[in-house]
Image (cartoon, rainbow over all chains, first blue to last red; front, side):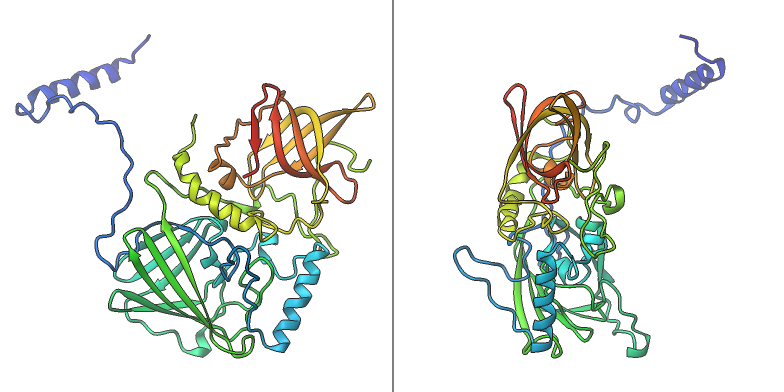
Length: 268
Length: 129
Protein backbone atom coordinates (compact mmCIF):
# COMPACT_ATOMS: atom_id res chain seq x y z
CA UNK A 1 0.00 0.00 0.00
CA UNK A 2 1.21 3.45 -0.87
CA UNK A 3 1.33 5.85 2.06
CA UNK A 4 1.58 9.54 1.22
CA UNK A 5 4.83 10.87 2.65
CA UNK A 6 3.20 13.74 4.50
CA UNK A 7 0.85 11.43 6.36
CA UNK A 8 3.81 9.19 7.22
CA UNK A 9 5.68 12.15 8.64
CA UNK A 10 2.59 13.14 10.57
CA UNK A 11 2.38 9.65 12.07
CA UNK A 12 6.02 9.73 13.08
CA UNK A 13 5.55 13.13 14.73
CA UNK A 14 2.52 11.85 16.61
CA UNK A 15 4.40 8.76 17.74
CA UNK A 16 7.31 10.92 18.92
CA UNK A 17 4.90 13.19 20.79
CA UNK A 18 3.34 10.21 22.59
CA UNK A 19 6.80 8.88 23.45
CA UNK A 20 7.70 12.28 24.91
CA UNK A 21 4.72 12.33 27.29
CA UNK A 22 5.36 11.62 30.98
CA UNK A 23 5.32 7.95 31.83
CA UNK A 24 1.85 6.67 32.58
CA UNK A 25 -0.19 9.20 30.65
CA UNK A 26 0.47 7.48 27.37
CA UNK A 27 0.09 3.95 28.61
CA UNK A 28 -2.01 1.62 26.51
CA UNK A 29 -5.74 2.12 26.96
CA UNK A 30 -7.18 -0.31 29.47
CA UNK A 31 -8.73 -3.37 27.88
CA UNK A 32 -12.17 -2.30 26.66
CA UNK A 33 -14.88 -3.61 28.92
CA UNK A 34 -17.81 -5.15 27.10
CA UNK A 35 -20.65 -2.63 26.87
CA UNK A 36 -23.46 -3.30 29.28
CA UNK A 37 -26.66 -1.33 28.75
CA UNK A 38 -28.15 0.22 31.87
CA UNK A 39 -31.60 1.46 32.73
CA UNK A 40 -31.85 5.10 33.80
CA UNK A 41 -32.14 5.50 37.57
CA UNK A 42 -34.00 8.64 38.71
CA UNK A 43 -31.79 11.06 40.65
CA UNK A 44 -34.72 12.38 42.70
CA UNK A 45 -38.47 11.79 42.92
CA UNK A 46 -38.83 14.79 40.62
CA UNK A 47 -36.69 13.29 37.89
CA UNK A 48 -38.89 11.84 35.14
CA UNK A 49 -36.00 11.45 32.68
CA UNK A 50 -35.98 8.27 30.68
CA UNK A 51 -37.77 6.04 28.20
CA UNK A 52 -41.32 5.11 28.93
CA UNK A 53 -43.81 2.65 27.46
CA UNK A 54 -47.56 3.09 27.77
CA UNK A 55 -49.01 0.02 29.46
CA UNK A 56 -52.65 0.52 28.57
CA UNK A 57 -53.06 0.53 24.82
CA UNK A 58 -54.12 3.38 22.60
CA UNK A 59 -57.68 4.17 23.74
CA UNK A 60 -58.13 7.35 25.76
CA UNK A 61 -59.82 5.38 28.52
CA UNK A 62 -57.88 2.24 29.41
CA UNK A 63 -60.30 -0.57 28.58
CA UNK A 64 -60.48 -3.50 30.88
CA UNK A 65 -60.97 -6.90 29.22
CA UNK A 66 -64.54 -8.12 29.42
CA UNK A 67 -65.89 -4.72 30.39
CA UNK A 68 -67.56 -2.25 28.06
CA UNK A 69 -65.56 0.94 27.63
CA UNK A 70 -66.55 3.79 29.93
CA UNK A 71 -68.75 6.05 27.83
CA UNK A 72 -67.23 9.51 27.44
CA UNK A 73 -69.39 12.20 29.12
CA UNK A 74 -69.92 14.14 25.92
CA UNK A 75 -72.36 17.00 25.61
CA UNK A 76 -75.15 16.36 23.04
CA UNK A 77 -73.46 18.60 20.44
CA UNK A 78 -70.14 16.78 20.71
CA UNK A 79 -71.78 13.35 20.94
CA UNK A 80 -73.23 14.16 17.52
CA UNK A 81 -69.75 15.02 16.19
CA UNK A 82 -68.36 11.79 17.66
CA UNK A 83 -71.18 9.65 16.19
CA UNK A 84 -70.55 11.17 12.76
CA UNK A 85 -66.82 10.41 12.99
CA UNK A 86 -67.50 6.79 13.94
CA UNK A 87 -69.86 6.48 10.96
CA UNK A 88 -67.24 8.10 8.68
CA UNK A 89 -64.56 5.69 9.90
CA UNK A 90 -66.76 2.72 8.91
CA UNK A 91 -66.80 4.16 5.40
CA UNK A 92 -63.03 4.53 5.40
CA UNK A 93 -63.15 8.28 5.99
CA UNK A 94 -60.79 9.39 8.76
CA UNK A 95 -62.69 12.60 9.56
CA UNK A 96 -61.75 12.33 13.23
CA UNK A 97 -58.17 11.13 12.86
CA UNK A 98 -55.65 13.60 11.55
CA UNK A 99 -52.85 11.07 11.82
CA UNK A 100 -54.26 9.36 8.71
CA UNK A 101 -52.87 12.36 6.80
CA UNK A 102 -49.55 12.05 8.66
CA UNK A 103 -50.37 14.99 10.91
CA UNK A 104 -49.31 14.64 14.55
CA UNK A 105 -51.61 13.51 17.34
CA UNK A 106 -51.01 16.68 19.32
CA UNK A 107 -52.13 17.20 22.88
CA UNK A 108 -53.83 15.49 24.66
CA UNK A 109 -53.76 12.37 22.45
CA UNK A 110 -49.96 12.36 22.47
CA UNK A 111 -50.19 11.08 26.04
CA UNK A 112 -51.76 7.81 24.81
CA UNK A 113 -48.27 7.07 23.41
CA UNK A 114 -48.90 4.63 20.63
CA UNK A 115 -45.16 4.09 20.60
CA UNK A 116 -42.82 4.83 23.50
CA UNK A 117 -41.84 8.29 24.72
CA UNK A 118 -38.64 9.81 26.04
CA UNK A 119 -38.56 12.50 28.73
CA UNK A 120 -35.67 14.91 29.19
CA UNK A 121 -35.88 17.71 31.72
CA UNK A 122 -33.99 20.57 33.29
CA UNK A 123 -34.91 23.45 35.61
CA UNK A 124 -36.69 25.30 32.84
CA UNK A 125 -38.67 22.69 31.00
CA UNK A 126 -39.63 19.08 30.70
CA UNK A 127 -39.69 17.78 27.13
CA UNK A 128 -41.69 14.76 26.07
CA UNK A 129 -40.60 13.19 22.79
CA UNK A 130 -43.09 10.77 21.31
CA UNK A 131 -41.72 8.22 18.88
CA UNK A 132 -44.92 8.21 16.87
CA UNK A 133 -44.74 11.09 14.38
CA UNK A 134 -41.57 12.29 16.15
CA UNK A 135 -43.53 14.75 18.27
CA UNK A 136 -42.19 17.04 20.99
CA UNK A 137 -44.27 18.45 23.79
CA UNK A 138 -42.77 20.99 26.22
CA UNK A 139 -43.95 21.70 29.76
CA UNK A 140 -42.34 24.88 31.14
CA UNK A 141 -41.53 24.54 34.83
CA UNK A 142 -39.66 27.80 35.45
CA UNK A 143 -42.66 29.69 36.79
CA UNK A 144 -43.69 31.46 33.63
CA UNK A 145 -47.41 32.09 33.11
CA UNK A 146 -49.41 31.29 30.00
CA UNK A 147 -49.20 34.08 27.42
CA UNK A 148 -52.11 36.53 27.51
CA UNK A 149 -55.21 35.14 25.82
CA UNK A 150 -54.89 37.47 22.82
CA UNK A 151 -51.37 36.22 22.18
CA UNK A 152 -52.20 32.53 22.48
CA UNK A 153 -52.08 30.76 19.15
CA UNK A 154 -53.76 27.36 19.15
CA UNK A 155 -51.11 24.73 18.38
CA UNK A 156 -50.90 20.95 18.21
CA UNK A 157 -49.40 20.74 21.70
CA UNK A 158 -50.90 23.86 23.24
CA UNK A 159 -49.06 25.83 25.90
CA UNK A 160 -48.08 23.82 28.99
CA UNK A 161 -46.82 25.19 32.30
CA UNK A 162 -46.14 23.22 35.43
CA UNK A 163 -45.05 23.52 39.05
CA UNK A 164 -44.18 21.08 41.79
CA UNK A 165 -46.55 20.17 44.58
CA UNK A 166 -44.39 17.89 46.66
CA UNK A 167 -43.00 15.46 44.11
CA UNK A 168 -46.00 15.79 41.81
CA UNK A 169 -45.65 17.89 38.68
CA UNK A 170 -48.90 19.81 38.33
CA UNK A 171 -49.27 20.95 34.75
CA UNK A 172 -51.85 22.92 32.85
CA UNK A 173 -52.19 23.05 29.07
CA UNK A 174 -54.27 25.55 27.11
CA UNK A 175 -54.61 26.53 23.44
CA UNK A 176 -54.71 23.06 21.92
CA UNK A 177 -55.97 22.97 18.35
CA UNK A 178 -59.56 21.84 18.24
CA UNK A 179 -59.04 19.34 15.42
CA UNK A 180 -56.72 17.20 17.47
CA UNK A 181 -58.62 14.42 19.18
CA UNK A 182 -58.30 11.97 22.05
CA UNK A 183 -57.95 8.70 20.15
CA UNK A 184 -58.10 7.17 16.68
CA UNK A 185 -61.87 6.85 16.92
CA UNK A 186 -62.16 10.62 16.65
CA UNK A 187 -63.24 11.24 20.25
CA UNK A 188 -63.36 15.05 20.15
CA UNK A 189 -62.54 17.98 22.38
CA UNK A 190 -63.41 21.64 21.86
CA UNK A 191 -61.37 24.81 21.44
CA UNK A 192 -61.74 25.69 25.14
CA UNK A 193 -60.23 22.49 26.55
CA UNK A 194 -57.87 22.86 29.46
CA UNK A 195 -55.83 19.77 30.31
CA UNK A 196 -54.85 19.57 33.96
CA UNK A 197 -52.27 16.93 34.76
CA UNK A 198 -50.71 15.49 37.87
CA UNK A 199 -47.58 13.58 36.90
CA UNK A 200 -45.51 11.60 39.37
CA UNK A 201 -43.16 8.69 39.82
CA UNK A 202 -45.12 5.93 41.54
CA UNK A 203 -41.78 4.13 41.86
CA UNK A 204 -38.44 4.34 40.07
CA UNK A 205 -39.84 2.51 37.05
CA UNK A 206 -43.46 3.65 36.97
CA UNK A 207 -44.68 7.06 35.84
CA UNK A 208 -48.32 8.06 36.25
CA UNK A 209 -50.19 10.91 34.59
CA UNK A 210 -53.64 11.75 35.90
CA UNK A 211 -55.19 13.88 33.17
CA UNK A 212 -58.35 15.87 33.76
CA UNK A 213 -59.95 17.49 30.76
CA UNK A 214 -61.95 20.56 31.68
CA UNK A 215 -64.02 21.30 28.61
CA UNK A 216 -67.53 22.57 29.32
CA UNK A 217 -68.34 22.76 25.59
CA UNK A 218 -67.56 19.11 24.82
CA UNK A 219 -67.86 17.35 28.19
CA UNK A 220 -70.61 17.56 30.77
CA UNK A 221 -68.12 17.46 33.65
CA UNK A 222 -64.34 17.44 34.15
CA UNK A 223 -63.17 14.05 32.95
CA UNK A 224 -60.20 12.29 34.54
CA UNK A 225 -58.22 9.32 33.27
CA UNK A 226 -54.89 8.05 34.56
CA UNK A 227 -52.17 6.86 32.23
CA UNK A 228 -49.52 4.47 33.49
CA UNK A 229 -46.11 4.19 31.85
CA UNK A 230 -43.38 1.66 32.61
CA UNK A 231 -39.70 2.36 32.22
CA UNK A 232 -38.38 0.66 29.11
CA UNK A 233 -35.72 -2.01 29.60
CA UNK A 234 -31.99 -1.35 29.48
CA UNK A 235 -30.74 -0.85 25.96
CA UNK A 236 -34.03 0.48 24.65
CA UNK A 237 -33.98 3.44 22.30
CA UNK A 238 -36.56 5.37 20.34
CA UNK A 239 -36.68 4.74 16.61
CA UNK A 240 -37.30 7.21 13.82
CA UNK A 241 -40.83 7.60 12.46
CA UNK A 242 -41.08 9.78 9.39
CA UNK A 243 -44.70 9.43 8.35
CA UNK A 244 -44.26 10.94 4.90
CA UNK A 245 -41.40 8.58 4.05
CA UNK A 246 -43.70 6.27 2.13
CA UNK A 247 -47.35 7.04 2.81
CA UNK A 248 -49.20 4.83 0.35
CA UNK A 249 -52.54 5.55 2.02
CA UNK A 250 -53.18 9.19 1.17
CA UNK A 251 -56.65 10.54 1.80
CA UNK A 252 -58.41 10.73 -1.59
CA UNK A 253 -60.84 13.30 -2.99
CA UNK A 254 -63.77 11.39 -1.46
CA UNK A 255 -62.22 11.86 1.97
CA UNK A 256 -61.42 8.16 2.13
CA UNK A 257 -58.12 6.50 2.89
CA UNK A 258 -56.58 5.48 -0.41
CA UNK A 259 -54.34 2.57 -1.34
CA UNK A 260 -51.45 3.14 -3.72
CA UNK A 261 -50.88 -0.10 -5.57
CA UNK A 262 -47.53 -0.56 -7.27
CA UNK A 263 -46.49 -2.90 -10.02
CA UNK A 264 -48.88 -2.59 -12.90
CA UNK A 265 -52.60 -2.99 -13.37
CA UNK A 266 -54.45 -2.41 -10.12
CA UNK A 267 -57.68 -4.06 -11.15
CA UNK A 268 -58.35 -7.74 -11.68
CA UNK B 1 -30.10 -12.37 15.59
CA UNK B 2 -29.85 -9.37 15.62
CA UNK B 3 -28.40 -6.46 13.77
CA UNK B 4 -30.99 -4.11 15.20
CA UNK B 5 -29.99 -1.37 17.56
CA UNK B 6 -31.99 -2.40 20.57
CA UNK B 7 -32.66 -5.45 22.60
CA UNK B 8 -35.40 -7.84 21.60
CA UNK B 9 -36.31 -8.16 25.23
CA UNK B 10 -37.85 -4.76 24.82
CA UNK B 11 -40.59 -6.33 22.77
CA UNK B 12 -42.48 -7.77 25.69
CA UNK B 13 -44.05 -4.59 26.97
CA UNK B 14 -44.93 -3.58 23.47
CA UNK B 15 -46.42 -6.95 22.70
CA UNK B 16 -48.82 -6.33 25.56
CA UNK B 17 -49.53 -2.87 24.19
CA UNK B 18 -50.13 -4.37 20.76
CA UNK B 19 -52.53 -6.89 22.19
CA UNK B 20 -54.43 -4.13 23.94
CA UNK B 21 -54.39 -2.00 20.83
CA UNK B 22 -55.54 -4.83 18.60
CA UNK B 23 -58.85 -4.86 20.39
CA UNK B 24 -59.25 -1.24 19.35
CA UNK B 25 -59.38 -2.33 15.71
CA UNK B 26 -56.63 -0.70 13.75
CA UNK B 27 -53.87 -1.89 16.06
CA UNK B 28 -50.75 0.18 15.67
CA UNK B 29 -51.63 1.14 12.15
CA UNK B 30 -51.73 4.84 11.58
CA UNK B 31 -55.10 4.71 9.88
CA UNK B 32 -58.34 2.80 9.71
CA UNK B 33 -58.24 -0.55 7.91
CA UNK B 34 -61.83 -0.33 6.68
CA UNK B 35 -60.67 -0.86 3.09
CA UNK B 36 -59.70 -4.47 3.84
CA UNK B 37 -62.04 -7.42 4.20
CA UNK B 38 -60.94 -8.38 7.68
CA UNK B 39 -63.32 -11.35 7.76
CA UNK B 40 -61.50 -12.98 4.86
CA UNK B 41 -57.96 -14.41 4.71
CA UNK B 42 -56.20 -15.36 1.48
CA UNK B 43 -52.88 -17.19 1.08
CA UNK B 44 -50.66 -15.75 -1.65
CA UNK B 45 -47.76 -17.91 -2.75
CA UNK B 46 -45.14 -15.91 -4.58
CA UNK B 47 -41.76 -14.28 -4.82
CA UNK B 48 -40.74 -11.09 -3.09
CA UNK B 49 -39.95 -8.34 -5.61
CA UNK B 50 -39.37 -5.67 -2.98
CA UNK B 51 -39.70 -5.25 0.78
CA UNK B 52 -40.27 -1.60 1.70
CA UNK B 53 -39.09 -1.13 5.29
CA UNK B 54 -40.72 2.29 5.61
CA UNK B 55 -43.09 4.39 7.65
CA UNK B 56 -45.91 4.73 8.20
CA UNK B 57 -46.23 1.15 6.95
CA UNK B 58 -44.02 -1.57 5.57
CA UNK B 59 -44.97 -3.04 2.19
CA UNK B 60 -44.29 -6.35 0.52
CA UNK B 61 -44.40 -6.27 -3.27
CA UNK B 62 -45.12 -9.88 -4.10
CA UNK B 63 -45.09 -11.47 -7.55
CA UNK B 64 -47.67 -14.23 -7.85
CA UNK B 65 -48.34 -16.53 -10.83
CA UNK B 66 -52.05 -16.51 -11.65
CA UNK B 67 -53.29 -18.45 -14.68
CA UNK B 68 -49.87 -18.40 -16.29
CA UNK B 69 -49.54 -14.65 -15.76
CA UNK B 70 -47.21 -12.89 -13.35
CA UNK B 71 -49.24 -10.54 -11.13
CA UNK B 72 -47.93 -8.17 -8.49
CA UNK B 73 -49.63 -7.71 -5.14
CA UNK B 74 -49.10 -4.78 -2.75
CA UNK B 75 -49.26 -6.02 0.82
CA UNK B 76 -49.43 -3.47 3.61
CA UNK B 77 -47.86 -4.35 6.94
CA UNK B 78 -47.06 -2.77 10.26
CA UNK B 79 -44.59 0.04 10.78
CA UNK B 80 -40.91 -0.82 11.17
CA UNK B 81 -41.18 0.55 14.72
CA UNK B 82 -43.62 -2.15 15.71
CA UNK B 83 -42.11 -4.88 13.54
CA UNK B 84 -38.53 -4.30 14.70
CA UNK B 85 -39.54 -4.85 18.28
CA UNK B 86 -41.10 -8.15 17.21
CA UNK B 87 -37.77 -9.27 15.75
CA UNK B 88 -38.14 -8.14 12.14
CA UNK B 89 -35.33 -6.38 10.29
CA UNK B 90 -35.14 -4.66 6.94
CA UNK B 91 -33.84 -7.95 5.51
CA UNK B 92 -36.49 -10.23 7.00
CA UNK B 93 -37.78 -10.45 3.44
CA UNK B 94 -35.41 -10.15 0.51
CA UNK B 95 -36.01 -9.85 -3.21
CA UNK B 96 -36.26 -13.35 -4.64
CA UNK B 97 -37.48 -14.97 -1.42
CA UNK B 98 -40.18 -17.56 -2.00
CA UNK B 99 -42.88 -16.96 0.57
CA UNK B 100 -46.53 -17.61 1.34
CA UNK B 101 -48.19 -14.47 2.66
CA UNK B 102 -51.61 -14.52 4.27
CA UNK B 103 -53.56 -11.30 3.76
CA UNK B 104 -56.92 -9.73 4.36
CA UNK B 105 -57.71 -8.74 0.75
CA UNK B 106 -58.83 -5.33 -0.39
CA UNK B 107 -62.61 -5.09 -0.64
CA UNK B 108 -62.49 -3.39 -4.04
CA UNK B 109 -60.59 -6.22 -5.75
CA UNK B 110 -57.31 -4.35 -6.20
CA UNK B 111 -54.36 -6.75 -6.06
CA UNK B 112 -53.40 -6.11 -2.48
CA UNK B 113 -54.23 -6.62 1.13
CA UNK B 114 -53.17 -6.17 4.71
CA UNK B 115 -50.48 -8.44 6.09
CA UNK B 116 -51.50 -11.22 8.47
CA UNK B 117 -48.46 -13.53 8.40
CA UNK B 118 -45.77 -14.92 6.13
CA UNK B 119 -44.26 -18.40 5.94
CA UNK B 120 -40.85 -18.67 4.31
CA UNK B 121 -39.81 -21.55 2.04
CA UNK B 122 -37.92 -23.09 4.98
CA UNK B 123 -41.04 -23.03 7.12
CA UNK B 124 -39.98 -20.06 9.24
CA UNK B 125 -42.95 -17.85 10.09
CA UNK B 126 -43.13 -14.08 10.40
CA UNK B 127 -46.02 -12.65 12.39
CA UNK B 128 -47.51 -9.19 12.25
CA UNK B 129 -46.04 -6.44 14.37
